[in-house]
Image (cartoon, rainbow, N blue to C red):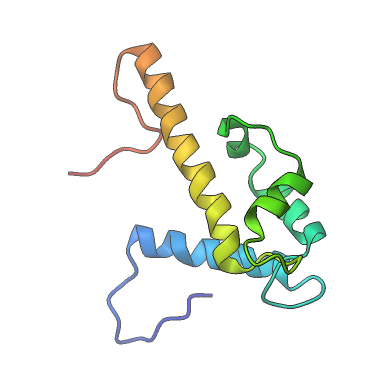
Amino acid sequence: MSKTSQTQEPLSELEKAMDVIIDVFHQYSRREGDRDTLTKRELKLLIEKQLANYLKHVTNKATIDVIMKDLDLNKDEQISFGEMMLLVVRVTIATHEHLHEVEDQQHQHKHQHQHHH
């Protein structure tokens, strides 16, 4: 599944996460139209299936139309990988803030995953 050569170091957790993002993008981008961009329908499906929990952390509850318009920087009615990453970044930042809000309410530091020092 991974696109790495045998001689390379094992992938880090962050690199594996990047691979997963790329793979998920392609699972949806290859369904119709251009194989390396998302149509509005593909974007809608990706959001519904892949961001169902974390999209809730983004404060403005935008419709698919608004999200599509917002992400489609070059106005070609398609979402490129780079444009989709804007959504991933926004949702990830909102989720990080949400985890801190939850932890402030509990008065203790508890991310869902343990930090390794």
